[in-house]
Image (cartoon, rainbow, N blue to C red):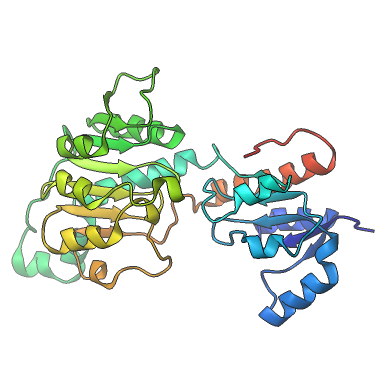
Length: 315
């Protein structure tokens, strides 16, 4: 008999889903209709002891209100901005996420977007497919990344991994953070606007949420200037997206590489028409390997909790 009831707000990877199903009584909230969800919570809400979710699935206070015996929320993501973490902590509900395991893939995507944007990979692909190479000859020149300066906003695990990769391409590194990092010799800035003014490429590597909302403001983007590039693998909320679109359309930024947006999966229509913008569907960590490791952390955190052991990655 599976005695522990778990509410599945968002599914895990197939292998780990099978592991969860072997041990727990799973309630597929993710598959239920609105009416079915209400019935599910009416019947089982008091028995639910754990919630499994992701950044996309999130967790709202209104759902917690229906789960009076909830003990743990296991989230398969690093970002916590779609979870009501403070509310969970106030109620004594433990929260886990999946840091570290996605650092390399996210940093790889940052460099992929940087290279594709600055070296104009997508227009080059179109130049070949459209027949322009045959009919018009060589496409216009693009810009070298070697020798350019990258400004990283937030030099945590992912920020440092990005810096390491950028250095391999001969780029210089500057950064902004709440405090200076003692273990690097990169140039430190104590304001983002000053950083943006001095770099060729600006890249946030910070979490979402209220504390970082709009941190990359219109003045910051204007300081980056018409020769500057903006790359975002953080969260759409960290940048003033309206200002970003406005400046790109006006030619006041050289280009942008974006994996995240303010209202996903909706992308501002104006961006779709720009050939100096490279777009991805929030998939920096979207590899079989990384998503598998994230999914396993969810399984392992739940197992640790219900065995009375220390959580592996508590928030």
